[in-house]
Length: 89
Ligand SMILES: [Zn+2]
Image (cartoon, rainbow, N blue to C red; front, side, top):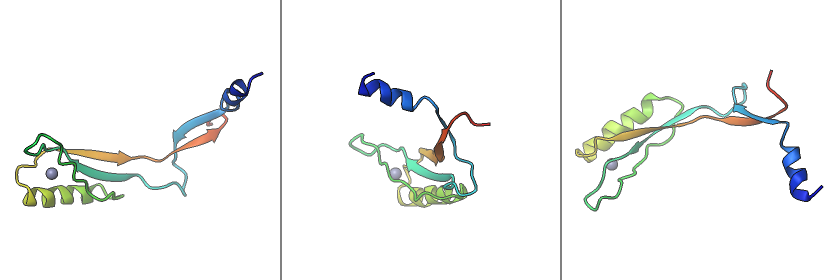
């Protein structure tokens, strides 16, 4: 058996699943500005990540007050996942 084949075999029993354990990192939310600037590049300003989905929305209103033409945003959600040995029950 080659080294590469052994490495593949080792990962067969692992499952990737959303981490919902009590000590899992929290789900976090952020907003990113999608507005294009005058030279057609994305503004890309981004709110701090927060476990409270309302906080990034407050940031979007603040950002629009500073840049009234920036009206397009994307919500960026970070969900923790974990590798699990064997099949989840
Ligand atoms: Zn912007």
